Image (cartoon, rainbow, N blue to C red):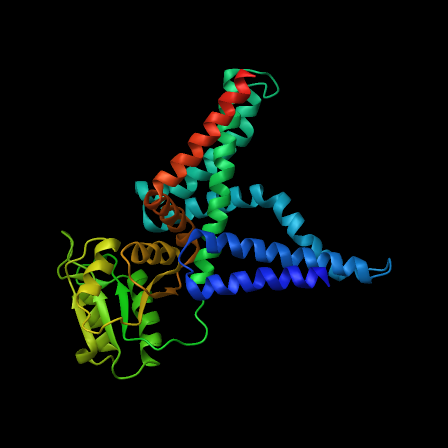
Length: 332
């Protein structure tokens, strides 16, 4: 009975947060706590009611998270290395494409090479530096986990919402044509748009880069019109050069008071875009367009770093606290 009450309380807190505001890292933390609570309750209930006889298949499922957790570092390093190589081979060598590969190599050097070079059991300055970096990394790994769950929670919208505007965030062009990445955003927006009333409008947001023949908004609108979207229901926002301006300039074009708005971008970019909208004081929901997995890993890491920059003071404060703790341990 107590287990059921705990699960119900945590579920109620999570549901209230989902209704009130999902665009926060704390919602991701609540989602992690909820999953842990449900898992723990099921695990305890199973052993309380099994009378010593447990279904091996069910037990294997329950123990799977422990196995995944134990193997997580190896799995993560493998994914980073494989995807890092793939994106460079398929998209070309650019500094922005090296993030996943560099992270994988850095993880190997940190977990294997450093402990081999120094004796981590000695009370030395090098070891205290190692442990301080380790504590910071654990903190950022936990925030990444919360960020991941918050991202998932924010692209799930049930039931279908009634909208006044659907904003499609721009990306780069190939001359005057949308890229496959940008096309996926437009097509996702078109699916959402098709289920809305006639009063709903779609905002194509994106300015013109130095290497682009037209603005992203124009190319996006043309792509949608060729696929059956009424041009009268499309609004062009052709000044924005980044996500912050995409959202700010798009809202400036809206004429309805307290509009119901959805932002459409790729999954890896969604949560940061929603956080920016929240910081600007705009209420909205988000929808994520599919992206190839090999591209998503590198891009998701980049977006996570972008999110950290939005809340930099908070993370510097935590790292400062961890530094003081480590200095205290050194001095005692």
